[in-house]
Image (cartoon, rainbow, N blue to C red; front, side, top):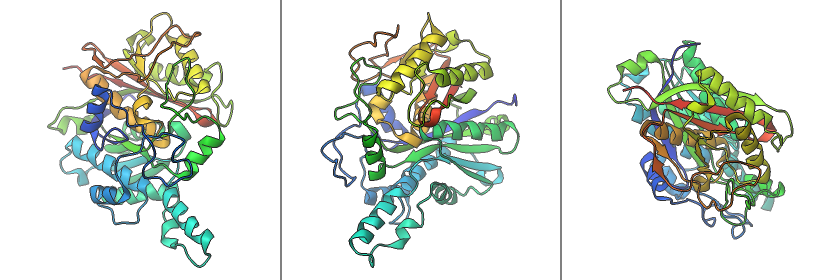
Length: 401
């Protein structure tokens, strides 16, 4: 299990950009993707701001290359996964043992909602083809077919930690010499089901979210997809382009505290971070930046903050929540933030935590509020914690020149 795993390519689409370059530009210039709902047809259109991808379904059809009628979840996935694969610059990809490990939580729910709207109005109406790709695994299969990946295909659905667990699984497949290259991450589109569900939990913010602020009110939902191309040491040596970083540590833990809440003492978050550090052979002081889970809810931020205080005190690394840009993209969030973290450790980027004003009284640290560079940044910790107590942490490490 000591074989190294490298990040050779990245791909992302979110509310702040349709590719990696656009997203990075938004992060550097403090442009959030949160706004009034435009594409999702819902009774809450004027109530809850969200971070939608700024493309209609017709525009996503053109960008992805899928035929019309495919779920938005799948189209977002293909755009980001294809970018991650192309970005890696792997020659003779078809000769390698390849895998696609993709996470999502809603599957083709958007098309299912279209069907039931028509069917409920008239039982003789409704296009059954809209429900064919409903389940989460079908989204993965559709994209894997387009990428030409047939050796290993799997779907992960563990709420907010889904994409992190997909990346961990991909790394394990490479470490155990089962695969040579894995495109891993996740995707999720906004649906009425999602928006209504989070509204029922009463954790949506009617204003722009303020993660880790003492006066935070809740989260803003978002959508998108993010993937990293993981490669073995042998494949990495054959690449002509530079690698982004290594995936040196990761851990999944579960506090089993509550279906939709994190434990107040942050034990699940603590175990995930501690386990990732142990696997990477690092101490807390080695981490230079934390990409926080940072949803903006009272419970999540308190729980994560308590765990960070316990693990890192008295010396805290720089940290921020990029969900202040992208919203909470659920099954896609850890994949999107893995891309941001890989860029961070490769180029020394520290991202701002937008709209932060007041430090939480019980926490002895505050997030960064301006974009900056830290040339000596060597290790980045990316956290993804949430529903069902499922907590995951990834550590991306800089490669020596």
